[in-house]
Length: 79
Image (cartoon, rainbow, N blue to C red; front, top):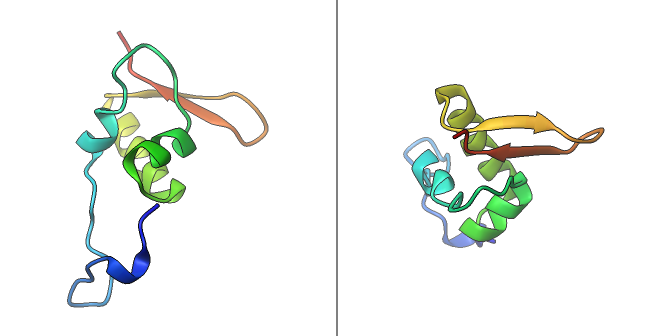
């Protein structure tokens, strides 16, 4: 996980984006579905950041998602 004290902030005080949707997409190297937590651990970011990137990828059509429990969601690359 990233240490917030070492993160770069923009002029308005907001954190500067450190990963791109493509960084998140690169985690999907096989046909296995993944949770936001798994992607976050792989990229070294908080789960919410990974979730946002995965949602961006789903909106673009690069990933699909499915709710698999009361609050659990998995993402995968469509063939």
